[in-house]
Length: 533
View 1 (cartoon, rainbow, N blue to C red):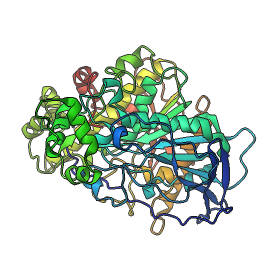
View 2 (view 1 turned 90 degrees about the horizontal axis):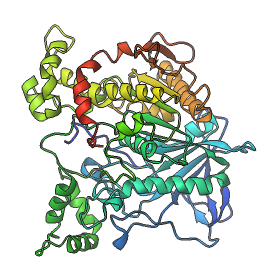
View 3 (view 1 turned 180 degrees about the vertical axis):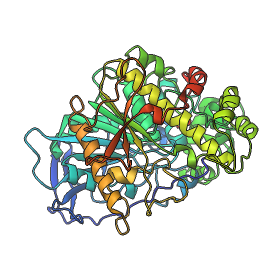
View 4 (view 1 turned 135 degrees about the horizontal axis):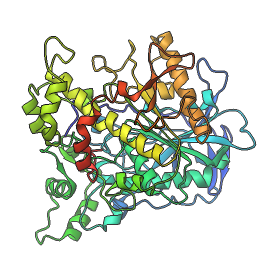
């Protein structure tokens, strides 16, 4: 299914390269890396930016659709990391980005321009979202400069291959090689382990964090990198891959069918039904031809259950403790579903027909979410948003938190519920991804309110504090836990008018999980599915 609105990532302007010998320089095994130093408004600390560092070889020609390979050794040649990298090839509205290329496997490092402590700085590695179709580390929202300098951490943002380039489902490829995009993420983390000490970071203090499909990517890392993971903690914003999405429409074209459709559109269908011939043809097609087709393509390229980068039954693995045993900070937004539901649906029958996953509980939903002029659900759209928010986000996270706490792992939960006059998409409430600018401090400053500035500072502090002390006090509020066997969870409401001086108010989960009991059968049947992201 196509979201009703897709957030396009805007590539940031490239910085000019300094002359040789100028700019912050770090020594790596492959050679020196030269960045740029930038001053920040309202900050006494400058930031070192190292932009567009290759962590893998360009995935071109025979490497298209294949797992990544290490970057070429520069043999001491300086790398001037002074320009934002191109985005990977996008799908849908993301294809409108002008700066995109298959040669996109790069990352960015943001470091305070002050000496690192002897023990090294905490490292936070960001994986962007975009339904595995769109997104780029060069989005202005993900500029790690403010978060790095305000919290004295290293922030790293990465690109990874998307859509057919990252998740081709090509039958000629071995099953274990089909999730190239997830292998990209792993190689980026390997680069961090091998190189981040040169930037003043501690490779033993890595937290991986992401939002939406970036968050589900993090959850895949947690559920599959069980032994000696290259991170010690994880932050998951609005996304786990443990359950199939209700937003998987019956009309979606996915998996091998998506590959076959694209093969036909690019005139690569084999007259002998040879999957090898089709793969060879697809590897020879110009990337511009892919982009032209992907602009309007309704096909969805998802990860496959290879049991290396993606498990078939992640919930079962969690229940059995077969996951990376790391602390977790996770949460959701109040109106996650608002960007994904359509106002053209005007009845419960239409909704259930479009999303058959909830057909079995339609009567219960009609009872608890009555559409009436008297409110609070004055339109079918409003009710549909509530269901999508429940199933794909709030209630899914509630289950994950309970199961994680039962393993004895530290887990903290938040509930983001704040809007401001400068919110990018007015009219959609506390929509999916609306917390990101506050986490990075990249919200529009010119018309920001005092409350917005304060909440952003609180969230930056909490995210970084969790990364610095994941086995201790975490983000600074009580762990979610499970109190007294009742199943109740403690949640930090971010943006609450009843917040304490630290920026949040503690609530119990009955406030936000009130309808989750309805979906128990839905989750029971969705545990072996694949989310649309």
